[in-house]
Length: 72
Image 1 (tube, rainbow, N blue to C red):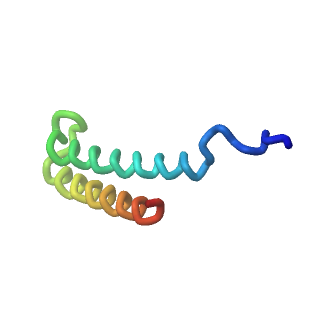
Image 2 (image 1 turned 180 degrees about the vertical axis):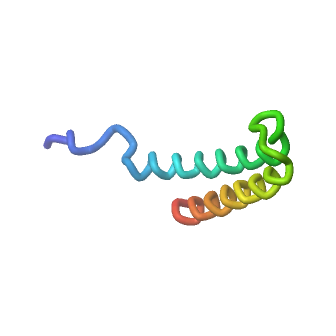
Image 3 (image 1 turned 45 degrees about the horizontal axis):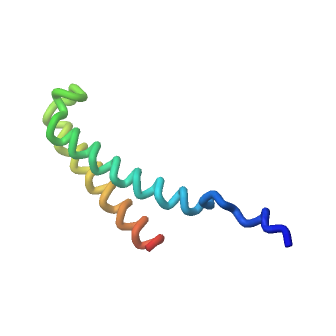
């Protein structure tokens, strides 16, 4: 019997699962970077960096929870 149809590489769903988890972590880290080091790294005024950083952190947490809930 020919078993070439069995894939040795991860399927698209597995790659997508890990990519989505990675992106959730990236959003959280980017939010933290904007929140604390905004004027040094991105030249964003402090009045904008706090809300933007908070939104990115919250979005990363929500996205990470949804990925966890869907895949694990």
